[in-house]
Image (cartoon, rainbow, N blue to C red; front, side, top):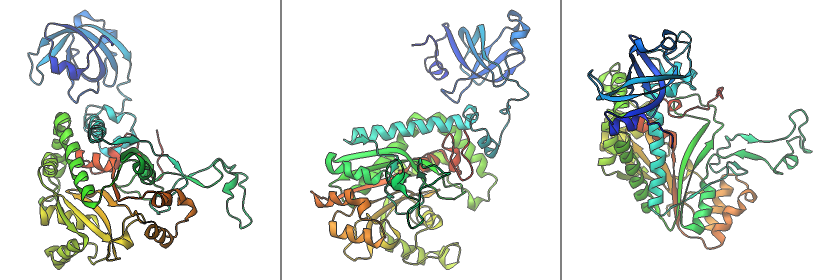
Amino acid sequence: MKNEISIADLYKIQPIGREITISGWVRTFRSNRFIALNDGSTAANFQCVVDFEKFEDSLLKRITTGSCVRVKGIVTKSLGKGQPIELQVQTIEILGDSDAEKYPLQPKKHSLEFLREIAHLRPRTTTFGAIFRIRHHLAFAIHEYFNKNGFFYIHSPIITASDAEGAGEMFNVSVLDKRNIPLTENGEVDYSKDFFGKEANLTVSGQLEAELLAMGLGKVYTFGPTFRAENSNTARHLAEFWMIEPEMAFYELKDNMDLAEDFLKYIIKYALTHAADDLAILDQRLAEEEKSKPADQRSMPLLEKLKFVTENAFQRITYTEAIDILLQSPYHKKKKFQFPVEWGIDLQSEHERYLVEKHFNSPVIITDYPAAIKAFYMRLNDDGKTVRAMDILVPGIGEIVGGSQREERYDVLLSKIRQFGISEESLWWYLDTRRFGTCPHSGFGLGFERLVQFVTGMSNIRDVIPFPRTPGNCEF
């Protein structure tokens, strides 16, 4: 191990009187004496006190905002306010210079829009350091939860010939010569000449492959990148994002709901415990941001919102009951909803948030959606109109989890595939699992960035992934 200590550990053990070495990036250097150093292990800076008479002016001039230094010295109790300990510096090594006049991150508040343009430097800011540490804790908690509960982690393919969602908005993967693309007699691209001998795309979901593994291993989950070629330039969409998708053999809809509720509560509690300091920073950031909004448009304080989810039982209602509640609501009667309410619609975020924040005052799970607005693989109910789907709604963003009991009956699934206009040949392997030892099974999907957005309180999804991929943007 390196003979250095992180600032996070330094604050934990507070080794007063010991000689230690730390490295980090200079946030500020005041009065040629006080270096505020940050190494990314915590949001807190560490004060290093320099006796400027003991160092060359030429060295001190190189200690600028953004420069990277390694310092060695003795840990002492701090006489100033704001920190319990500080370092009396003995030696300073400049690891990397930074031109103070050109460095984009000056000691002032920068807009989130500006920071997106310098995504390679924004992890050095207090806000984004907190976001990306929380992202780590959430990812770790996800793996820990599934491991504790008997799940096997599987890796679904990133390149696939199937469209799990039936949406068609996929990124094509091809090695064909763009200057001389082979065509069929019908004038279409001849993918039989391509690398895989057929059309291939980047995956939109690992669900179908996870189902295959669940039908042999019992309980599995995939946690990996997915891609949507959806030309949506909004604060809610990314072209590349990460998905958590558990699939469980022998689980019916109620089992699926129970698992998803327990899972959400576990990982949010984990973040509240292990990322308390970072969450406190983002809680304060959100409170400052909300001050500029009218009182009736302000969102719930961040920490209150997270505890709201962990401390309340999730209400469970059917889609039909949800529509009835919305139709009887004062919001509908006073025409406050932007989008219409009627049976058969795909619920909008405003409808979902009304149910959670106004009507139930708790997270909500809605089940039994119209078959016409849900994917082909969801199990058809006996009424022939609805499917055993479930969505979990939370304050602030509405839907955060979507799942279902999967259609295990071969004949019904085949009929749905034909109804959706999907090629039977492309899903022969999926149909096989219904021909050979089928059983009830269920699963759900959770967009990781949507989860990070919820936990951090960030309003734009581009601010919770290090390097966002969006229409017209593939920088870094």
